[in-house]
Length: 625
Image 1: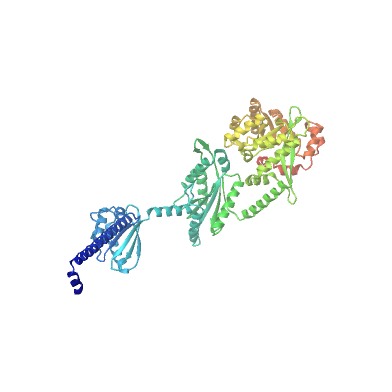
Image 2 (image 1 turned 60 degrees about the horizontal axis):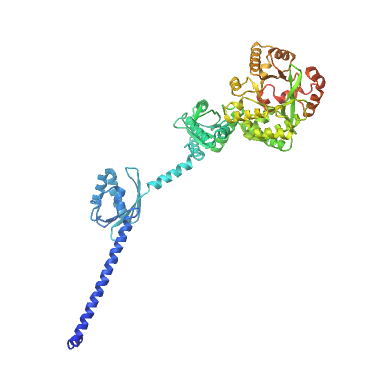
């Protein structure tokens, strides 16, 4: 070193070189320092930006519990003051400030301090969930540092929790009505059945809306959905807090009734629910009417398994429907056998339709003034290969419930029109149409097709309808009726007098003919009230230019009386029983006309069987057959 200095000292020019080198080194060192400082500042700025734009709140404390840093999100999360929450602030002061700003209660502050100390002492990552007074939920996660301090993140999970709660709610509730769904009801049933096994009782009430499909088809699904919500509200209003109602989908609902003391309890509830639901509805300017059929199963009597109880209540509901709807039935073990038998009957009916196993019979209708056959009513017959003759009263309801009635109705229409086209003169054919068929918007097209294919004149086709077609006062139904009449088809009101508002329906549509129900004709020659009713009907029909047909005429006394009372036509066993298509043609070709001629041509054979098949004591049995 001394030698180097001596070397430089002996040559002054060398001092200059050394100074230059030193200056250059210092300059380079300064540049490096400035660059490092700028990089550090930039990094710190980026770090600050990153920290303050985190979705989570962040705090860092040293081992003495003083704040080292926190981000803006933490201050915003709890509504704190930046003047208080700054480096050096103690945990104790921070807790006091949170109490002051309302994000922490005094009681919670004590628990918070104890929990924090325990978390730091454990020297591991610890998380807890804090519920704020304003309803928000915060997850706080604390991570220990090697020097004894800790870092904490504060994550607001309120929205996530709400979304999870919504998903959980939808998993157990119906989106349309807000009621519990099938899954939730089954869970509730599992809980309640545990109590049943300890000696308590419960009931399951299962119901759906009668003829809901026609409301959906006639008014649209938006109106149908609003009706379902209204039904749900009314039914729920009939329950106690301990009872549960659930929507199973479509128009099906189930009620779980607990705390039952006697069998009359579910019966009383069923009556209350039905009465509430059956009241008129005003939805989007439409006045709607609906009714429900209710099936009831009891636990433990009818089972202690949710599926079993629901199945039995469902069976009981269909039993209620088969007894006229708008009522309720308790489950009985015999219902299982009837359901199996009904299912077998449905399969056999499908097979009969597919393999031409059905036949149309025709019963003449006589003009009383001219003693001439004016028309014949088409009546459906089913000769089962094993059961023998099956009554229409037995298989027509099955066809209506399963939707087979549409296929069956079209077949009857085509067959009847084809047969009538071969009849002599102007003899017409009458075909029964159910309310279910009539609400099918393709009925008009099916009638036009049947007339076109057969070549039958429209005026020779009579469509017989009952009050069920007009009960809903559906604009589409009335429009279809008017279109059929404009086509030339004659419209007949069947079983007149058996409904509560027959006269009202005469105002809603101009019928061509009224058929007076057999229940009045049966007593017309013996009871004055029956005679008075028939006379009133014939007088009303005459003033409205409508023909009147007396149904079920079986004796000469009845015939004489209906002539006297002004009936223009008769139909019944006195003149002729229903007969095959071949026998009908023979009768019409003979043009015998009058009672005597018919008696001579057609011996009265098998009339007892015909009575059983047509169900003369039950108008509903004749509706389609």
